[in-house]
Each structure stands twice: as structure tokens, then as C-alpha cells.
Image (cartoon, rainbow, N blue to C red; front, top):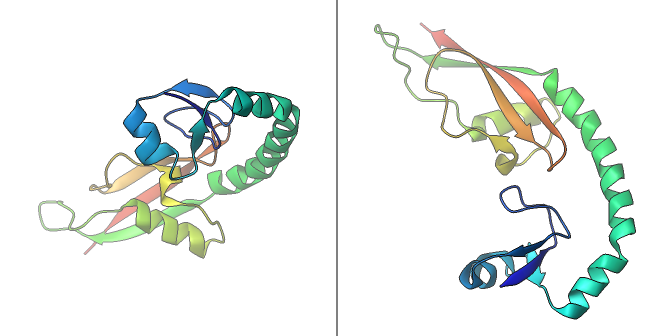
Length: 148
């Protein structure tokens, strides 16, 4: 099934792209969540006619998000976790912990924006990527310290 993406979707494409996806994925996931619509002739014509407007809007959004990305890249988050005698950490640092710490620093982001394949389960310094949209990303410095 051909669909037109209404929103940027990191794994699929940008807003306005026409993609070929499986029927079930489109009907059960993309269309109900408002991420895509069926690519009929009329829908394609209307998307192409509003393309300039979308480009201007995207440029404005990118400028605003670049300022936020600059602010995020200057932040260093520090977490303290308990460690046993062998140096093995109890618990971990997950996306939720990072979101809460950024919220305390007056930066509002969603969990989905953080690229963290698995929770941090070791003591040390880490860099975590944050994707604000398809064009703008930033890296946060995360420090995990052992608590005695």
C-alpha cells in the first residue's frame, strides 16, 4: 500500500514522502496514529501543492530546534547509583531518568527522541544522542558515579 507520511517518522521517512509499506502496517499502525494517509491521486496533488509552505515551516522549526540542541549539547547529566564490592552496579540509568533530569534543567523532550538502545548499566562517562527531528540532533554527556 502506498502512503503519504503526515509527520516525520525516523524509521520510515519525512513528512510528505510517499512510501510503499505493508497493508497491515499502514492500516493498523500508521493511519490510526495520524502518521500517514493513503496515497490517492487527490491526496498526492494536495501534498504537492502545499510543498513550499511545508519547506518554510520546516526551516523555521529547524532554527528553533537548533537553539534547543545547542542548549542540550552543553548539559552534562550526573547520576549516582549503588555499586557492590565487585564494581557491579545495582539498577541502571534509563531513558526515563534522562528525561526527568532534562526536565529539571528546563528542557522538555519525549522519551522517543532519546537514542539509547539499552539502559546504562555501568559506571563511567557516556554520550547519548537526542533526535529532536529528522534534521536536528544533539549529544548529551551522561556521567554515572558509584555510590559507596
